Image (cartoon, rainbow, N blue to C red; front, side, top):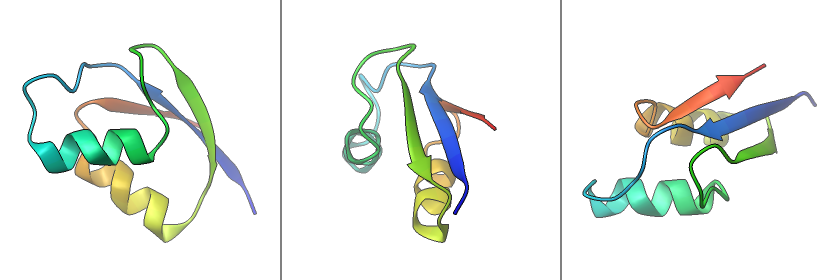
Length: 58
């Protein structure tokens, strides 16, 4: 299974609660932080929900 890197580029402060929880579920806490996750449909859906706050580094 391939891995994708996800980087938080905008703060979740002032965003909807569901988006904050999605960012937290992805394991992101600080701006500029990069996490590596398996490329699954569930992770892709989470990224799609908060695509304005994250950047995918493949």
